[in-house]
Length: 442
Image (cartoon, rainbow, N blue to C red):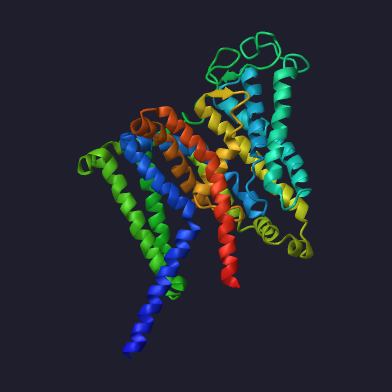
């Protein structure tokens, strides 16, 4: 009997160690950057309220672009570097609206409307090209971005003001040919208000009010699942998961209520959190895309994406039009990238005509990979986690570099290095994990 008990304990320890090892292996990039972020926060010496406030702004303006990457991953096309093309479509719409002198919410919604057909055209052409480079979609999409950037610069440096009529002295270079390096989105050609903060300023609400409402809805949902008679008789693991979710969400609700209504009961560093404001409609746009990505998985189209992503040959045998499905995945991603770029730029208030779109794909993909995604699997949770970690590092690295080395510029260099380096590290770790899994299966 003692031998059996010892064997069970040994097997339990082995299983636990195996689970920890697998968790560390599959989340190695996320764990690494979580540690880097914690060290950076400590070294920066920045107030926690400042970090969270900045992070809240960055999450709402950047997450839409990261979520635009998910559908191509589902369709087996890897990380879509060609969202740069979608960003260009969004910028074209913004330039047109600013030149026409349409500002505020009307200008913003017109930008969304104008960007959509342009992005559909760009996405369709990109999808057709990527269908010719099956198995090499990531590198092909990267070169699509480079090629498109060349055409974009040709148009706005040489054709605008000559072949494309534009007479704005405010937007054109002094020669009358080509757009200026920057376009101010706070005002438009007529001198009235532009689209700066057009979405952000519609309605700002205390952040923790939104959290309280969300947690109450989440608690009700998990309680319904827990008390559902069919689910109650299922395995104990499902019930434990629901109970754990209720406990975690309840703790978040309690903290939110303290932050809003009894801040004196919180530690000094957390007492000011009740002043955090959320741009409601910007957050709603991000949430809508997240819900869309979640719902589409359950539809026939989503199942087609997954089938094509898992095995193109089987999908073709099953009667699916593989090329059209892949084109649709890229087109949707391109349209979402165009809208995401508009959301991003209306918050920034300034369009760098020749530079705003250049790093979009790199930063969005880096954020997604930091969240634990890979070239073959990416989730909404990983997108949000990646944006939080990536932009936390962006916020604290200049101050950390200054405190550690006496030069804030070193922090700037470090975060730029991270943006590029994380892609190489993540792809290398992904290949390593594939090799380990393959060796374990032999």
